[in-house]
Image (cartoon, rainbow, N blue to C red; front, side, top):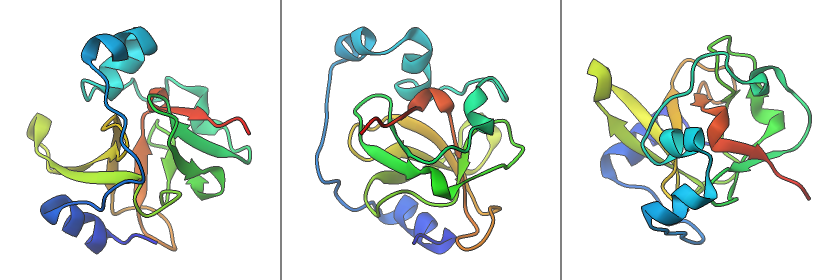
Length: 148
């Protein structure tokens, strides 16, 4: 289970290696993703707050990266943050989300990316509920429900 101390440490000193890597050209990503998914995941964009019904969905299941299919979050760790984006308390595994310092837009934040394909997922904040105290504020366009 990650803590804020672990998240900031990884953002400063590096992340563990993922189980696999997926790398594609920009043209390949453009063919695979919708224009909005490309803007969010490949160009580090953000969807409008409350623009996805995924915020209010709390069905059991696994959420995976919309770009590469890496399983990222379990719905049992999802919570209502009232932030306008789907929020989770922890990733599914230790090495599926990478952390990076992000000083864009005049803010100091920790960016969360898919460790497998470098897709921008969103940001992590230290204001979540127990047990981790973390809030993974994730763009719904970066996620899809895994189908078993």
